[in-house]
Length: 140
Image (cartoon, rainbow, N blue to C red):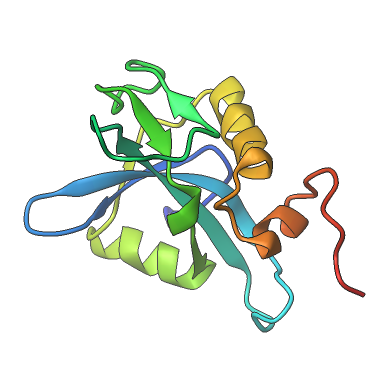
C-alpha cells in the first residue's frame, strides 16, 4: 500500500503564504472533473481567514474559535479565493513537505462550508455548478 497522500473532502491542509506563515485550507472535493479544465482530476480548496475589525468579509460561512483545532479567532471562509489545483499538484506538494496535513474537519463543519459556498455572493458560478448548489442554472 502506498503512503502517498490523496486529497478528500474534509481534509485540512496548511499551505504557506509567506515566510513562516501558513494558512488553513479545507479540501471541499478531493477529485473532481471540471468542465474546461481538461482530463485531469482537480482538488477544490478554500481557506479560512481571521475576521478583522473594520475589514469587510464574506459572511456566508463564519467560523467560531475552536470549530477546528487550527481556528483560534472568529474567522470566515474566503470563497472569493477558492483554489482549484490538479490532484497531482496537491499530492506533489504534500510529498515534498511544502504543504502539510492538519486534523480533518468534522462532517458538520464540512457541510457548513459547502452550504456557505452555495450562499456566498463571492463564490465562482463554476464552483456553484460543480457542487450542485440549488437555484444555479448551468449553461447548456
